[in-house]
Amino acid sequence: NAGVTQTPKFQVLKTGQSMTLQCAQDMNHNSMYWYRQDPGMGLRLIYYSASEGTTDKGEVPNGYNVSRLNKREFSLRLESAAPSQTSVYFCASTPLRATDTQYFGPGTRLTVL
Amino acid sequence: DQQVKQNSPSLSVQEGRISILNCDYTNSMFDYFLWYKKYPAEGPTFLISISSIKDKNEDGRFTVFLNKSAKHLSLHIVPSQPGDSAVYFCAATGGTSYGKLTFGQGTILTVHP
Image (cartoon, rainbow over all chains, first blue to last red; front, side, top):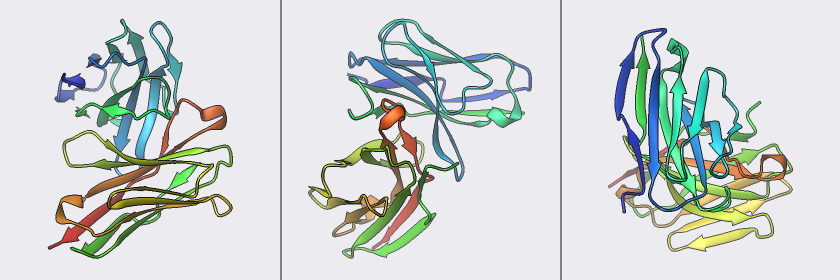
């Protein structure tokens, strides 16, 4: 039981490049989330998926797209990376809603030059 | 507009003493509050939560207190241990934000042996 896994762990991009951050959970959870963590800002919600087939914007969705591929996988795509997207990205999942414990992955550290 | 605030960026405590971490919120619709702990290079892990129908919740060395009138919650760790050294985030959800967590900026706790 791996919990929530994220790939890659580290990534360096040049401005304008695109990439997809992958997230998978093996706990049969319904809801999945993408956050970014910046110094002094805490974790901010980018997008979330309450259930398979649905996605909704969070607090900071601009510059990102998401895909809930199936119940297990929730990917985050940067179409044209910008230096302001340099951050640590965390994926999380929860059985139903946010009042259930959210389980977080180990994070992806992204640097955009 | 920071709806959840942790005004102390850091806290230093001696082993065996009490650690008190504070959190304030502005959104009166929040009705469920959580504390997460984060070690470097890892994702946050759930620590303890409290519903707005309670004013205290205890789990071993960890106790969370909620003062709804002051829109303030605190996490008490007694006794503090060096292994408690980490970043602590408070989070809140409720009302139109139900299903999404709003995090504070985090407080770095250092427990000295």
